[in-house]
Image (cartoon, rainbow, N blue to C red; front, side):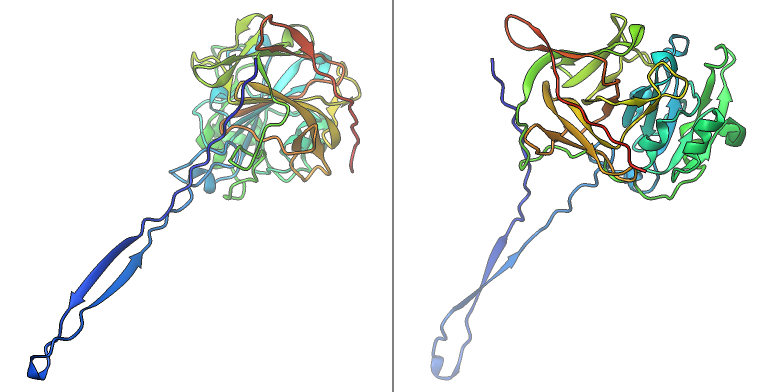
Length: 361
């Protein structure tokens, strides 16, 4: 079964209105003067809508144009679930940390949740994620080796000791999974009040999705119980997150969903089982992009830590996402990523693309 993804661009044209004015002048001897008609045109123009940089969605309020990015480290330990604020994040990155467990780095820019967390500590991979966007980096603390890295990034650091009332402990939860941040108060902590650069390219009439395969689900094979399943929900046009065979819920009672899921296979320096696991986010590697009910194989490319990552298909063309929120999964290159094709009979295939990762200073 084949399915074609149709992307529609809306073009607004000005409306021209023409009017005519006829007049006659009387001269001596009763001679009739010729009637003259003049036509004028009036054109109306429309202003392109303001788009939020992390989602590509219209932002009528303009709030996304007047504040920096807010980056928050969030726990993914079973004791931390359900988390607060993840369902309002523009972008969520899932990285491997010690022992093969995963942790989130949630980026907020269009929304400002009243509660975000549980907030956890910085890891070595984090500077490479936040470097291009800057803004505020909120975290609980960290080991010296991890702090040395994030101190070099162009972000305003807000840990528990410097947060003041912007962070608080929820006494109904057990430490360390009970530290939360307040969106508005964290935004007020600093960062240049200008929007960050866009992280993705969004679909328009000039983009095509070469090699798109309709699928119903994808599995990201993180270690053990941290494996993640994303299933396509045609009713909401989004991917629903499941873990351990159950819906992955937010504290709001809503299941986590994403308009796009970008699966970047990453090499972890030091190994995924070590305390110092560090994702190498420069160079290139394989990527699988899930958007609008299809999967697209390709490569991720990043020349330096200060640049945003580019995502291209196997022909080298940019892969356009659908405007909306995005989850970026970063499994180790040794982890399996599988998809379930939307054909009869249903089959599961493992997508393999040669991987090459290099580190840039």
